[in-house]
Length: 305
Image (cartoon, rainbow, N blue to C red):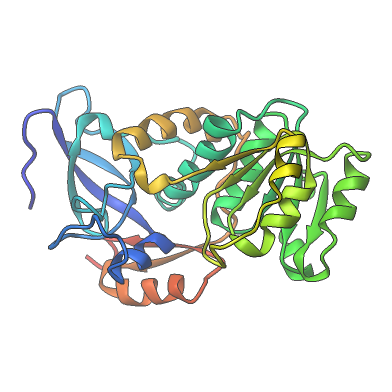
């Protein structure tokens, strides 16, 4: 049982998501990681020790330091700075709240902090049924943007809520350019999110209107691209790199604090598919994520006790 110090809280973890970055961590690919450590970046739980104003509060949190440079959330308890937790949405289950963290940071950092998306702007979201993509679609729609969802194939397209997206493009038939031209009447999109990497860099870049912003938060499918600098500066394009792993749990709490009213008002909804595992089956949960599960995988430390 960890013991909180001054300015810290002890949180009993009720649910904790497993993210692709946890697989990267367990494979030893974070150079700044320390050993020994508990893994896990996201959680929903309850404050059991700490300042009187926080004790008993139902909270959630996430951070790039959790599970990497300090003990993480795949445990029954965690000690955190008091400003690294914030009240979780009352209308979300613990599983739903725990599944927001990393993907919420990625979507908010891209759309709000980097691109500053505005009402009425056009946004292409790649991997629109994936974890970050789903949240980005919800957030963009909540901010009044018009969304074009980029998915892999017809099966993924069928999982979209067409009330949230204005148009759908598919990578398997390479129709992004034509879909963008038709949907935007030739204007192009103002913002594009790349959560895949090199294979869709050029198509997304070409989909941008003059002055458009391309946000890149993953290069899992390829890191190297070529860039026509003449075209880039003549069209006044912008590239933004998003690294949610660089955000501490304190920064994460500040972002979740902004997302909470959007969930409580129904402007944003939790991911449509969540799969849960008790903590003693964490190995199976990690395997699900490593194999590319389309569901959000969540550990339940209290299950089976």
